[in-house]
Image (tube, rainbow, N blue to C red; front, top):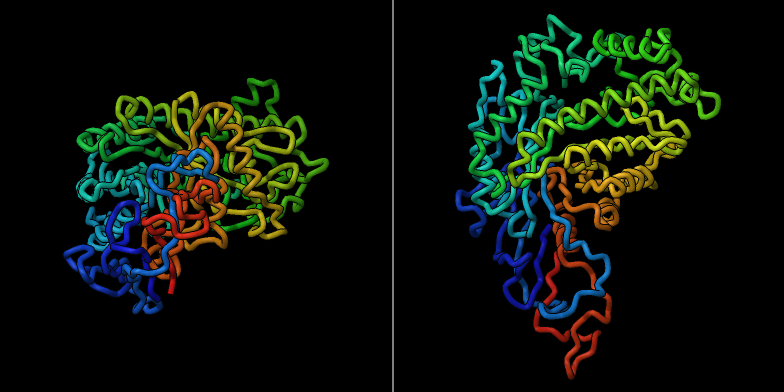
Amino acid sequence: MEVSVIAKSQAKIAGADFGNRELGLLNSKVDSKIFGSKSKICFTRSSRFEKLRIRLSTKASQMEPVQSQNVDVGRRSKSLEGVKLYVGLPLDAVSTCNAINHSKAIAAGLKALKLLGVEGVELPVWWGIVEKETMGKYEWSGYLTLAEMVQNSGLKLHVSLCFHGSNQPRIPLPEWISKIGESDPNVYFTDRYRQQYKDCLSLSVDKLPVLNGKTPIQVYHEFCESFKSSFSNLMGSTISGISMSLGPDGELRYPSQRQPKSHGVGEFQCYDKNMLSNLKQHAEASGNPLYGLGGPHDAPSYNEMPNANNFFKDHGGSWESHYGDFFLSWYSSELIDHGDRLLSLASSIFGNTEATVHGTVPLKHSWYKTRSHPSELTAGFYNTASRDGYEAVAEMFARNSTKMILPGMDLSDQQQPQESLSSPESLIAQIKSASRKHGVMLSGQNSSSSGTPGGFDQIKNNLEGESVELFTYQRMGAYFFSPEHFPSFAEFVRSVHQPELHSDDLPIGEDDTASSPASSVAKEQMQAA
């Protein structure tokens, strides 16, 4: 497969010249002279893509008119010029030993993204790597090296501070946290079956001195201060934004789903002793002590449907009872208070820098077409057919002057299983509306690194309007640069940076018509051969 950049003369994408260059994908050695005559990008070995490459070449053929630099652009359609595009770096870009994984491939990838016109990259910085062995002992060397690579490439850097773990690739919490968890499992979220979720700490211990005499908030604060000090020469100049991890996978939510891509309703996560203690105190203070004995007894289990038990039933379900309102109000307010604490912490530390602070809100879109919205309720969002649960969330982001990251912008309703009664489009619209109301700017992300059918078109639809200013495509790796994917991504970047024009916006000379090649500037195209 070959990708050709076609133009009258030496082709340019986003103002950068491409000669004859190859992006070899897998099982190939990266040349030390990146993007020389035979440069390649290699992230991993795989027989499937062993012989595949993207070849970027210039050919003098197929000219089409484009807008010249001095043409009025006021009437062009679907202008997305204000949206900045970023690409996520591999989750394991820095190893648990603080070495750079795929260093030459990443360097070549950064060069490719810069040439394509991408604004910057996003880098996950893992708590379990930086503060791995001992509390207060930080090792930033790998991340500093990678940040300098980004700086040298001329790209911007958005840093995600990850106070959670990852399963793929496996990156656990710090070793010293795991030792504490062995003796005190109540530092983790717990379900009604007493199963712990060990990839982040429970929000119930935020202010408790359970970490060798310190609270998690104190530990997070010291980590952020160390990061700010260690990267001070890059703050604002190269580092443009910082995301604060707010829960599982960095998102503001409870770990209500334990299996990826499950369409079940999930489980409430309120059974560690500290959550139960908070619930008991809240119930007694409200004059309903019996409400504080535990979570809903009639809720379905993780992978069950809403009607498997009484709590989430559309009509007559316990969620609409006095107890249901009491519990769901408490459960969601605990989550919002947790987000408030962490975003307030991040704003206080990074507020005097030029880097903007972000937090991620999940897109729990399964069962959105039901009245009870069970997937959102178990995740901590009291959002139902009769109640807007995102108003309080947007207000919390606004209070802390932070920006909201919204994943799933590549998802459409028609691609969802009918039985899940899902509507990602409606949920995105609702969150956008709440954000606009409270003046919160949005950043978008896609949901899948393997791509979704029609995903790029859906992303562009969701980027419309004034509320979304940044989109991060997840994420760089072997598939990202494959011939099956990279040409589509390159076309997506071009379409965002150079929106389509109305026919009457095209330049017309004395002897030209709008339908003829009137301009000497050729339209650059990415074509898959």
